Each structure stands twice: as C-alpha cells, then as structure tokens.
Image (cartoon, rainbow, N blue to C red; front, side, top):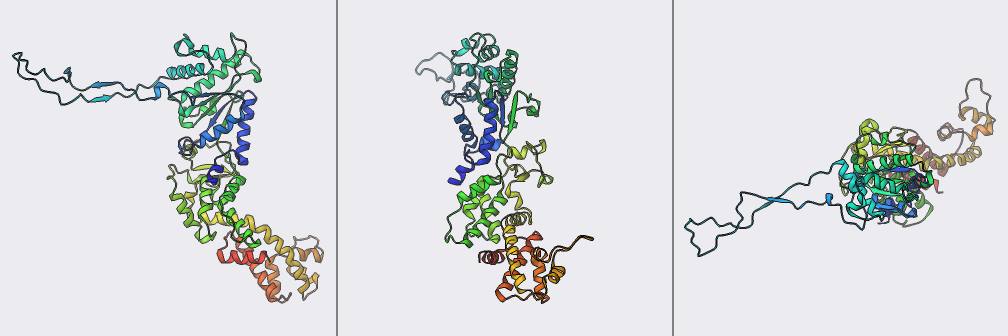
Length: 483
C-alpha cells in the first residue's frame, strides 16, 4: 500500500533530514552508532532494512556484515551434536539361527532417540574474533584462520588503518548488530576501531570508520552514554518524523474527494488534520486510519481507531502516565521510557512526547482533545478571517455612531491607556461583542447575516473553551466559511 511504503521510506522530509545527519557524520570520518527500537528490527515489514538500504545507496562503497551473500555464522546455527540415551547397547538385533548358549537378548524397537545439546554460548572474545574473521574475508585478505593470525583483532585493525600497505581502509564498515550471533561484539569492534585509528594519527578523511545498527537491548545498559562523542556519533531513532511527515502519509492514503468543491476541500482538510493529530509519529496507524475513517465524522473517529488498532499487534509496553504531554522530550528517550520505545509505543513528535494512539482510547477525553487541537489548527485562522470580514457588515448595520459602538463593544482598554481610533476599535471587535451589539439593538442584521454571525460565534466560543465541534456544527461552519 502506498501509505505503508511512504510511512517507512526516506521520501518523507523528516526521515530524509535525519538520515542526512547520519551520512554527514560518516562522510566527516566519524564512526556512528545507530540505535533503533527493537520493534523496528523485528517487524515483518523490514523497516530497518529499508532504512539501511537508503543509507547504503548514498555511500560510494562499504563493507556489510553479516554479508547478504555469506551464510549465517556457524555459531548462529543450531548445532547437530547429540548423545544417545541409555547404555552402550548399539541397537542391533542378534543374528538369527546362531546359538551361543545365551538367552535371547531384547530386540531394539528402532534407533535410539537423540537429544540435541544446546549450542555453547560464545565468549565475548570468541564473538569478536568471529566478527573480525568475517571482516577480513570482506577485505579480501584470505579466509579461515590463516587470515587472522595469532592476534586477529590486531591484524584486522592494522590492515584497516593501513599499517603495512600504507593505504587505510576508508570504506565504512556497516555492522547489522541485531543479526550477529553476539550483538555486543559490534560494540567492541566500534570502540577498538576508533581507538586504533586515533593511535595511528590518521586525519578524518583517511580514517577507517564503522556504522553499527542495533537496539539498546543488544548492548550493556548505558553504553551509548559511555562512548567518546568526539569520535563516535550516537544517533537515536527518536523524533525522526514530524507533523509534515504524518500529514504527507495521511494525504497519500486518503481516497479522492467525491465532490471537489471548496466545502469538500475544507472538510477534508479538517479530517486530515484530525488523523495527523490523533496518530502523531505512528505513521502506519495514520495511513490505516486515513483509509478506514471514510465519513470523517468526529462521532465515528473512535470506532474507526479501535478497528485500526485491533488489526495491529498489541502494544507490548506502556510508557509512564506522567510522561504524556511532556514538552522538550530531549534528544533520546530517557531510561524509564526505553522499554516502551523498544516496543514502538512512545516517540518524540512535534516537540512533545507522544504515546501509541491505542492508549488515548483508554481515556475518555484524550481523543476529543486531539480532535479539538486539529480543528483549532485548521479553523481558527479561517474564523479570524471571517471575523475581519464581518466588521464591514457591523459598520454598515450600526445604529450608533462608530465612536459609541467602539466604546461600548470594542476591546477593553488598560487603565490609563489612550483609546484607539473608532474605526480601529470596531475592526478589533470580537464575534461575541458583535453578537452582544446585535442583541442590544446597536446593530441591525439581516436574517442571513444574523445566522452567519451566530454560527461563527458559537464555533469560536466552543474552540476557545477546548470543546471540539460535532458533525452538525462542523458542517454548518464549513458551509458559512465557504459562502
């Protein structure tokens, strides 16, 4: 589907900017640690692989581990070792028609059952040695134990820094740590390579560098904060998308308008803004809701959102309640949010901390508050324009001198402030003050003008009090705004 493909690709502006920062660090000679939520590394849509493909496409050349062409490391495969159950009996039946004077031995019913032994976990040193051995093969330096010598770490790192050949390896070493049998080996490689390059005194443009892609669950706690930031850039997949990205996904997923009139376009703008606000950074949900919520009525939004979330996997971790709505969520999730971030249920979006939309359904007013934000975003500028235009009608229908009208119904002045000119004061009259002047007989409105002012005033008052418009009020307002 076009929505899902766009939701995870580098075509979105926020993701494009995020990946550009990562590439800038690599091109400047810095190694990078790219931290992704565990949910992205495990999902069936291969979002992590598609994002990595976009990065690799921008690199002139690279070394990729594990290689797509090479088989899985031996340590990652199940070991066929097994042991027979029972004693030393081989399972063979005695030869018939041969009498050795002994009673008949029991005949085996079949081959002995084998119980596989669990694979022996690799030690950190063994895991690093295996990773370096495969890196040596990618460098074209031979294979097997002959390629790594007595000190595999020193040998491979020396070749990367150009010792012996005089030409350092400048192709980025890209390690998909989540596919390694021991992901933490990639972190050891990252640190060792950076330290070796510094010892060699290489300038940034000739320095070997690596890009490690992993989840925080692959490494010891707090590793990202312990890395030397002057040499290693840590990039969290946090706040990578913003409002424009979500709005783009929603617009691409929405069905075409049945009647492309001005009213239809305005109502569709409110619908798309509502989906964007409700779903936030959760782009797959935004695309699905954009297709499911076909009537765009506020009353049916909750039901459509329920249906969309029911078709998706159950969120695995609930972020703390107190985190909701926090401003300035920082450059990465703090420690208490890591479990929810890895589960894909919390992110930074538009300068705020946002939770999975499924959690808003638990709270009666949460979805309504997001609907109000969306309506406010689209309709408030149009209401202000309509108010400005209606001041012309007020001047024409005034039954009092403008100075008196401005004094009685214009904006209140601070004590000691000089009064505004009458025409300017009338231009600043609020919709509620205009309605009050009509009710008091200070202005005389025709039925169509009275209806328009009543609808504008009611909508403005509701939005000012954080109350979203229902379907009927929204339709009436759209009708008036498009006259």
